Length: 363
Ligand SMILES: C[S@@+](CC[C@H](N)C(=O)[O-])C[C@H]1O[C@@H](n2cnc3c(N)ncnc32)[C@H](O)[C@@H]1O
Image 1 (cartoon, protein in one colour):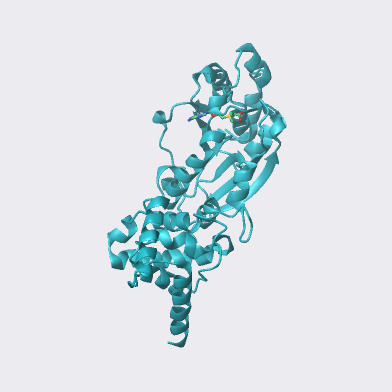
Image 2 (cartoon, rainbow, N blue to C red; image 1 turned 135 degrees about the vertical axis):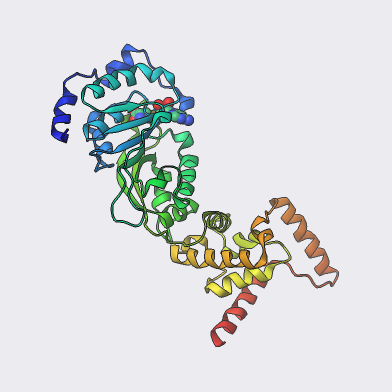
């Protein structure tokens, strides 16, 4: 069936307005489930258009609520929507929508287990995108952990990304979206910026005022579209990138050396010096100054070290600030007692790195 016939068919069974549906079913938003609904059809349509092209696509929608976004996905040509919704009170709304889309030869499922196998995939290295989309006006309270899980899935090409570079169209609190999209030297630059940008082409689609939601949200929202890159910008397994980046942004306003000292065991400051020397990274710069290419150099060097030094290096976990403080105290005591110690201090690492970098250049 062509898209235009489907569009005319979908108009046949009239849908009650979302506001009427919520009123009829006496559905009040539950704060604990971060329920802020979008009821304005124009905005919902704009949101669906951000996931285009949708013709013939299968869409996985997270948190369908009363189904406003779901309607617009069908209107824009989605062949099938698999909706995930925790709150069972929305079942009647979704069933109502289901009847309408069935009449239009479309399919709405609220249970993933029946997903049919179809050829929707596209080779990861081709220009073409698979006919699958992941979308959601996400509940604020779980949007960050959801995105972090999906980024790892993208890096490891599992879950829906085993079918190719499935694009994501998601809403985030504006402040968090700014962090995802932040460039070098900006205050918003952080771990989410690096993890997102090394794996995906990230684009801000548009902002939605908090006043547009029911109930009104206290913050504004940004719609972000992420398309996985054919080649990640950091060619290192995700857990290594994640660990290094996490350490690098431990104290975003402090020097990199202060952040990274906990990446290695206290008796292996030689490795930290090597990391800076090999990559030509300035230990005194702050993590926000580093480009993705510089993070790529650091991650590759760290990955090489973990391979040569053995798995204990990657497994090393810094236990906590107090332990570090205690160790430092004992180091200070040893220094006072005239003993030679080999422990990280910022000045020590900076000097040694400078010498190692000079030696690298002259050698
Ligand atoms: C911000 S509302 C969006 C609702 C609807 N899509 C819209 O645009 O109006 C988020 C939805 O996610 C649902 N939700 C919250 N936690 C969830 C979870 N863990 N799994 C699935 N859905 C969840 C909420 O019940 C709510 O309907």
